[in-house]
Length: 128
View 1 (cartoon, rainbow, N blue to C red):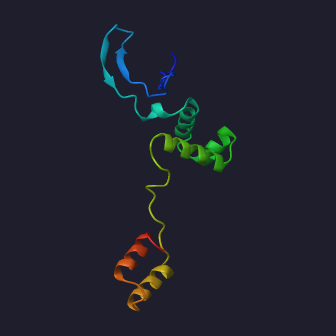
View 2 (view 1 turned 180 degrees about the vertical axis):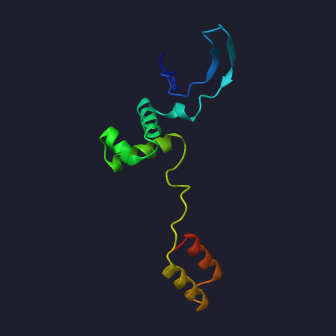
View 3 (view 1 turned 135 degrees about the horizontal axis):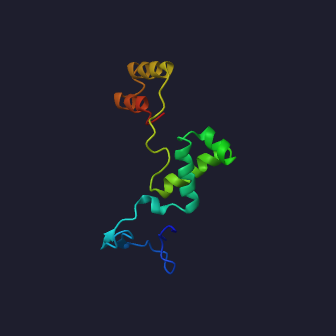
């Protein structure tokens, strides 16, 4: 069985599933069904996802299995993330500030060089 096409070959609009069929009991259902986010992935991207899951998300194992470099695997992962409608790195937590930087922020605040609001932004990683 081949995967269902997700785009119209004429206008490139996204196909809509309107009929489902069970070959075992010959039951059919009609309606409007979503294909899901994974339908946005190309066959190559789907294979990448399967490999990623099989390797438990460990990029060093992916490097060995695919024979690709770390940057290439990261780039392909970012392509998959974008195809799923997300932006890579968006939900990453800000980097932890070291003790010296925190002390400097507090000293600047106490000296009146920055406002409390500016200090909070810096401590949250929102501004440098």
